[in-house]
Image 1 (tube, rainbow, N blue to C red):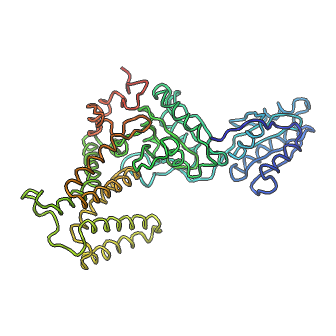
Image 2 (image 1 turned 180 degrees about the vertical axis):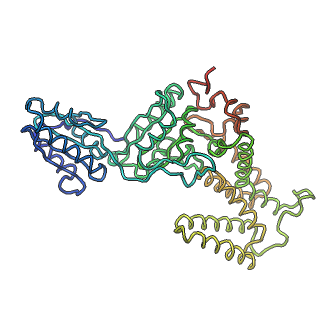
Image 3 (image 1 turned 180 degrees about the horizontal axis):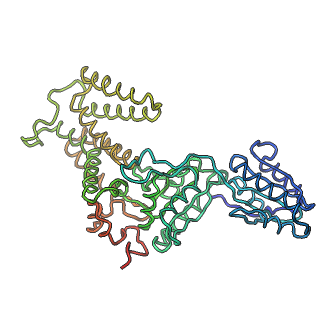
Length: 490
């Protein structure tokens, strides 16, 4: 965690402040540092700013306001007070720390030093470059809002407040990184979110000691939930403000990190990762149907290939009605190897699609589907059923709303395939059991990962399986231990 020691106080002499800027900040070397000296009522003042983080027209307007003081004021003894009164912008504050002043300037604020005064004015006129809010590519909905978080933390907090106009919504600003000094906003609703949860997360963020978090949210996640080599995500990412606002109303904490278009939701369970906003934009019946269909697809992405491999290796386990399952003829390559190769092939295509320009993506898909797949079957590299079940399993991964959960499920599936290929029924049974036990022992900030399945809670499990109508969902989920349990007034 970057911490200013406040030992370097602002000098009363402007030339000393200027020397500090040249020696420590790069004034005169870095072209994007703006500097201007003005004379106001026979007193010199210095303005410092970063050109790319401030609106040029706003900087010019401030200079114009300061220069016009000479035309309307004559009291030479109250120059600082007159300057502060004439800067007509939302946030103007004072600081006596030179370190803090520099940090503010590097965040996009304007510094104003007045000769003979041991403090500086900080004017918040940030105008970060970035795109406008638009619907996230990975969280499309048929019905619903089309705005999404951007890389601008100011816009992101505004999108959140627009949905929760509650005076008890708190957005605390923290700073992480000795060099990057990245802004991190801690968001929660004061009378809902558990105090211990807030303090735990805040303490973990304040304890971060690193040069910078240029990879933003992922770095913060690793410091909060631990750097262990676990495949399953213990936090949820979303780029939709409505999803973040819904979790805030349930008692979760949301972290908004500057330069990241996704926010972190804490704590989360396995079932938080399989829910989608579209379920709440449809009627409860349709939402329940979509949710159950998604659950089936996710389960297929994990267990379909290992289960089919088990039946292919041990056909005696199949009842007579399902005897058609399994390869009709033995190939030159073992079934397990075919599955692994085909699974890796789909992973190659997925990674290639990410780095392929959009106009070429369609062509690449046609080549993969028509040429590679069919030719691989014709030459005997893969059996038709292998292609079928691998494709269904891959579709299940793409149906998974959480990208991180989908990738983790791939790793779990691969482990189960290897265990089944080596040890048959025993390998499948043991790997399945270990998989459930592994998920059961995971915790996200002391929150059981498989809640409400393990430990079991009937009401919570009902709301996981069914999309319960909102008027009937009167209590918040108990897993986050909210201070205010009721969603609606009694």
